[in-house]
Length: 128
Image (cartoon, rainbow, N blue to C red; front, side, top):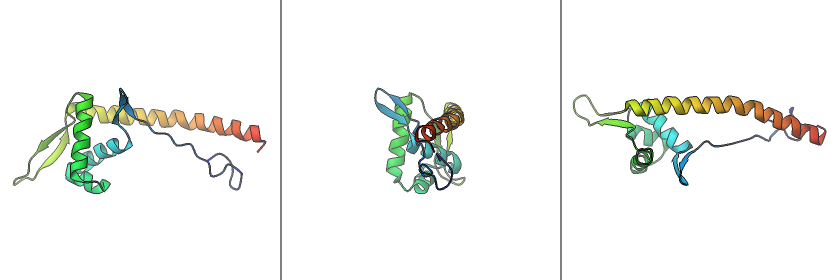
């Protein structure tokens, strides 16, 4: 928010997206990271897809593309049976999630001050 309630810029916000890209190909964007978080939460690609409102086929394809473009496996899968199936992160997958969350947290912290400074400048320019 750029100003006090009722001011000209009250309803203006800065929105940005963090994407991991290689040669113009998105590897991890918001949708991909949400999928990974949902897999982590429910230990299932099926439940992740359901929670996101996407098909299992799309979720599986997205996961496969992420792994292919990164060059390593993110999840290990155990098929059903008496104990039931589940999907868990490999060591590399868990480390990626930790590092990506840390990156997002650091960017968010840095962005907040940068955005405040930007809107202070905007308010100064317009005299509000």
